Image: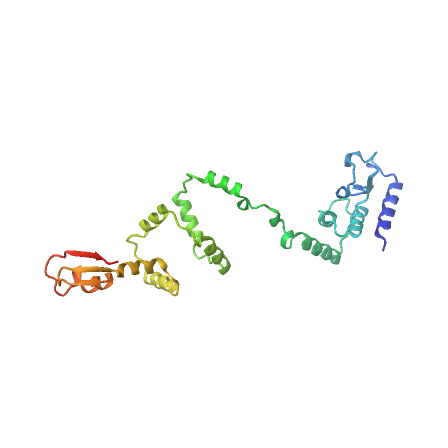
Length: 267
């Protein structure tokens, strides 16, 4: 079907009728060559501009349907047709949209505008992807104090929230190899000092740490086991801090009084 010929005949027929506003009929103004295709003409200058024409509401809908058929890949013309189909009823609307036609156009519109990268949310630039924007946000938040009430709201909102394995991996990869500032480490240590954990928390922490290498702990143990401690109670030199603490010092069988401890470093 030559949709362009059908469209030209519709426009030619409408122009030949010399329609005017106020003749008792309802008309809508239409760009013969759509604006998105380079068509000119301000709708207020319809009396003199050759690219403008008066159409009935039904003709206007048919014109946009034909334009979509002529230019099926033009998303703006598809949007215009969709708006013609979903506009609210008024006294001049004398055409009906079939359910099949509505379904066809709606599915096409959603497919081209709402799926995947076509979704409007993907066209919104994330400021956090821009280093300059991140710097501005950081500067704006410096020195900002969050009230206890706000902190409590944030805490409650995060309760019970489960992160996906993918999100956990991203967080882990992002933090991997990064050293926390000394001030942060001291602050966390101070907050946890004297804090008692429940049996469930201890068990959960134990399960998490199973099979996870701990080089810092291994280095500490290696260093402590390379030391020799002198027990003042039995007079013996004990290798390794663990043995010394467990069987000597205050736990020494020959403890009398005093606990003079002498530590000897062994190369």
